[in-house]
Image 1: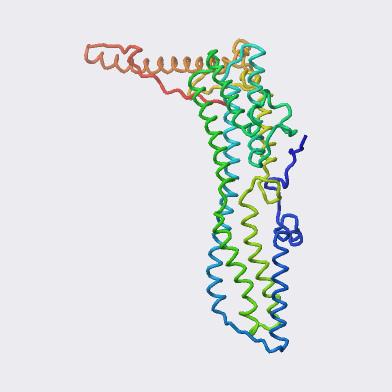
Image 2: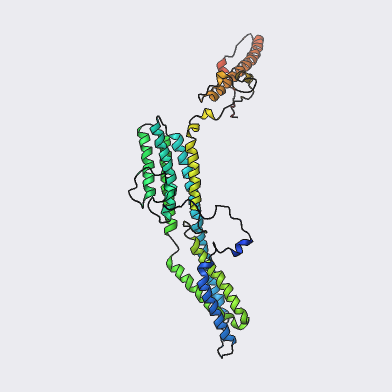
Length: 399
């Protein structure tokens, strides 16, 4: 078994401090030390030759520095920006995956009915497969095929036919579970459409992950950038030796360290799905998804019995007599507090009905009195019926 449960850095937990100046673990220094050493020796040799008085002199001016420097700055800027765009796109895709998994786990828990223990077990297996899907994407992006990884333990409940296509097989199993529930009339058409839409969204996210991983910057662009970069750094001593004297050596070393580092950072972050400290912490993302789905799975009995964890209290604006429904302590009377999941609705409707009756009666009495007074003068008495009184507006609040 391969242990893949622990990631590199904690997500969003790194604080910049002065210690980073000597932190070479996440630095690109190791990848540029060889070309940097070569350019340093190169600058020492030619600077020494120029100032040793061996009869070899050169002064190419600063024209080449200006021309190549401008072009190089544009190429390096584009290289770094395109690499960071890929890094940020990868992070957004992990966020989208978390959103889809959260929504799908909620719908699988609440949208599919269970009538026996076997059906409850099937739903739990579907939620386990949902966790396995996120983990399979992580390994798929790292070109790690097969199920011989300990973060798969207890999640896969079927035999994998193709070890290179585990995410697709998992999604096939989840959709098969949904279709089976529909055939048994345990999920309505509306919820089925939502679940299948979320499954399609998960497959689309996987495709976008593949696009980021499998579409690096064109090789011709990368090669040309490196050619120009080394041409610029190799020609630098010839450009500044006459004016900077022995300061040419540290200037070339500093310029080489800066430009080689920028170019190397682009290559470091353009594929952010590996194990490097500069990569996205995919292990942490998968751990968060597992924790959330497990939380939903463990509390599904609570969600299916809403009356057990919430109470609905209704307040009718302008109504009187609400105390008829409550004890002096403020709790519902036993007759109104049956734990059948409908007590809150009964309270609301009853309060609304009583308030409406009182308002009907009051308004009808006032209008009939006014009509009676007018009819006494005109000798044409008429009374208004209840149907003629417009229903009052009743507002019900959930506390």
